[in-house]
Length: 271
Image: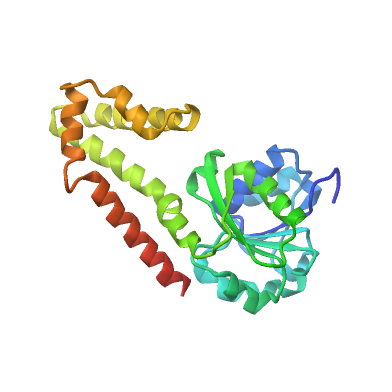
């Protein structure tokens, strides 16, 4: 470590790994504290690493044991990647996986009884607006938990759960959640076009409305229900729309079914 920052080894510098690395460096992490392991980084990422002075190696065997080992590869690659990490995992290194569907037990099979955190971030992390939920195994110390929290806060909010099965529900709500919002924007755009708006304008209205409402949810202390009520005048246009969305069965039932389907699929992927 230098300057009080942990040493980090990042396995995979794709969209999520790259977003986290950028957040750490912008937050003051010295480039000398980071090592990236990626056999074929994207050209723009390779150029960025070279420009910033971040060490980049092709295999984990070339990396030294870090304080924090971040595993940010695709889930289908975990079975191949994890056996290569055994030599740089250990009791003084906390391994953090952001691969969906990869259980702590599966990681322990390959890494041993070492500190492991299973984390579920979401794609707004690219804009430092994400939220990550973490679940630790037994060997994770309070100090390591604090290290992980500090690192993941570079890309958004961080929460912890003690029961790993809850990560599947987290995946269904926040991990997959951005896609639900994007689909809402698509639906609002299509509906606006159907009512006579040019597609470009309808799309802009949908995007800015969702972005602005999301910022209100993030900043204001009022509940989502209270904010909805504040927009809704009796017998007005919003009330007319909500009478459709909140009918039985309505949007609430549809969202509940969708999130349930995602949670079930997450359980299947987790094995």
